[in-house]
Amino acid sequence: MKILYVSTISNTINAFMIPHIEMLINQGHKVDIACNIDKDISPILIKRRCRVFNIEFQRSPLSKENIIAYKKLKELIYRENYDIVHTHTPIASVIARLVSKKSPNIKLIYTAHGFHFYKGASLKNWLLFYPVEKWLSRFTDCLITINDEDYNLALNKKFKAKEIRKIHGVGVNLSKFYPVSDQEKRNLRRKHGFNENDFILIYPAELNTNKNQLLLINAVNLIKDKVLSLRLILAGNGPLFDHYKKRVTELNLSNNIILAGYRKDVDELLQLSDVSVASSIREGLPVNIMEAMACGLPIVATKNRGHRELIKHGQSGYLVDLEKTREFADSIYKLYLDKKRREEMGEYNLKIVDKYSVENVCQELETIYKIYLDD
Image 1 (tube, helix red, strand yellow):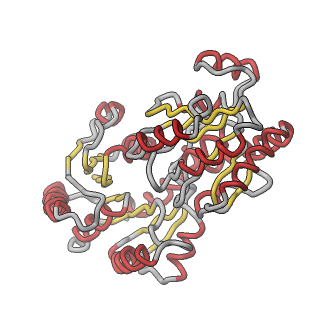
Image 2 (cartoon, one colour; image 1 turned 180 degrees about the horizontal axis):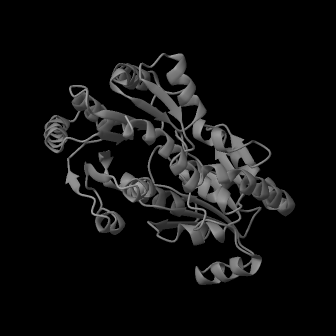
Image 3 (tube, helix red, strand yellow; image 1 turned 90 degrees about the vertical axis):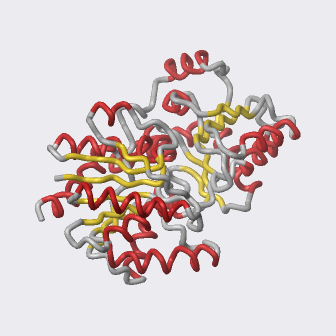
């Protein structure tokens, strides 16, 4: 079978899709990729002989360049005669379904990594994204959701996809993300320039408006005088890097907050930390939280559908309303004072993270693929 993976940008493929694609290749299928190549495709996929087609999808739904992307994707799909098109990310998925709807022989699978319309979303998001997604669902053979809210919304709003499924996200690599001993943690802290007694928070995420790191900066500012050893690692690049750097300087937090930039050692940074924090406005099912759970960390996070799906308030961490910076800071301070509570929450997370493993997610996808590969 010939399968085409479609995504707006290549970074999404590199970050989340490699195990899924390798699973298909190992079963003897041919997998190609179509995306806007914003970053080089992983050597793993190149070595597995995945062909990569550069199509300049734009994240803005109003960009005229998406018309060109539509034409290029249409020419590719019809020329190569794919059996399955599996699409990810909103804009690429809209274009892929517009193309594929004219070819009844193609099976179209769409993984929604988090609808832009959700409980609490702006009216603009509902007016812009909801009608499009509902209309295009009729041209979707299988709509895959990754959280309960999106799954129930698709069912309750009577989306016309031939099948609606839920899986446990994109999967976390439990052979890479795991808890370490106290001695190993001390060694990692020395390696990365931290002190043994530092109280370390971590948030690996792109520095952008949705990830909302300003909440964390302000929360640290509220408790810096009570937790003198407090350190916050913000691992990631993004459009707000300079803005956050300026804010950190203004609040005299340079000794407390590390803007670490893009990192390939997030596993080690999680393993040396005490608490995972997350401040995002919108999430589908965040991998950074799953990775923190796999490392045995307690979590303090904002309330959104993805965080609610993963975090059980009071058991695996604390969930805080988005606008309540003081409550967020107090939740961090509460965990700082209670090491036993941190350990209990970390143990709870280790017990529930298995169902989000790459192996389990690949099994769930394999079950879905089998329906269409055998069709």
